[in-house]
Image (cartoon, rainbow, N blue to C red; front, side):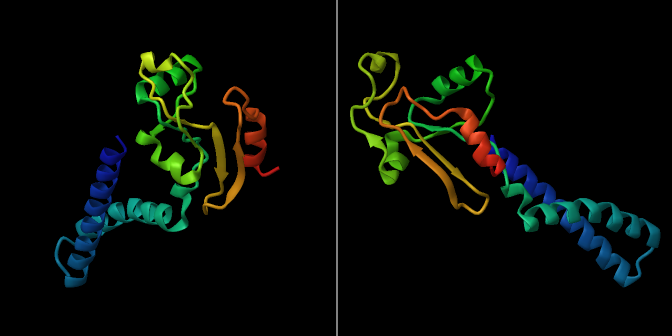
Length: 162
């Protein structure tokens, strides 16, 4: 879904940029009807300016939405999110490659019996990493016991900057 969204935004941005610069070109050349080209330049210029502001200001990169990463199948993550009424985007780490790089991979860490439900043998220890928009780590917590996790209020305080 994100790829389609990216393609659409890129195509839309390219189209309005093309329309804007073509209208300016026609205005500079003195092509008639003058007000038609001026109208096209003005109508294409405002969304172009807004998108340029989004890209250049970094506003689009300052998301405060959690993005859980899991090695379990996405269908399991989606069911869990629906059960707890927590709609969010999930990312999958097949083979625990990101977990291995972070040093949180747990070989044969999946509790016995869950393999029959579609879970793999290996997992990652539950870890929370909160970063600012520049990628600086503000908080990190790796648990030794997968049943013990920090309270969500702690995350909210850190995100709010307290």
